[in-house]
Length: 163
Image (cartoon, rainbow, N blue to C red; front, side):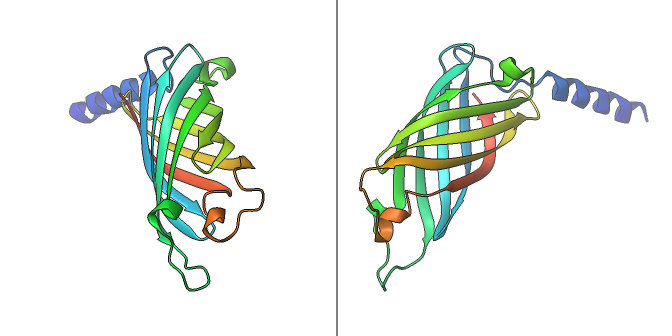
């Protein structure tokens, strides 16, 4: 019984000491699944802390299960996306330690958009995240066919690591 209490106390202390965003020099890696109209895929994100509440990063995604359009399959260029991101990390501002709320802007190879994400850390190094993104401006005035894949609402869910 003593071992169970000690393990529970250590787990609770570790759980309570986790912090979502530490500021300048903080690096977060996220790997997850993407869901959108027409298919699903994988995404990876890395964010670097610039200051107390600001970070920048990069995101890459690849659509694994893409629907055919008019009998044609999507090419690699239609399935891949890469973005540069800027985030406002609001955990300190709203008084949360373990949950990081981060709205931001991104500029990618298909569009200029915005995203809103949430990271919850169970320990100093591991957590879960969810993020949604929308395009604000597309490079084509009326995306057609496979151009719609990377110019729509996208939802992500996955694991987040503090490096």
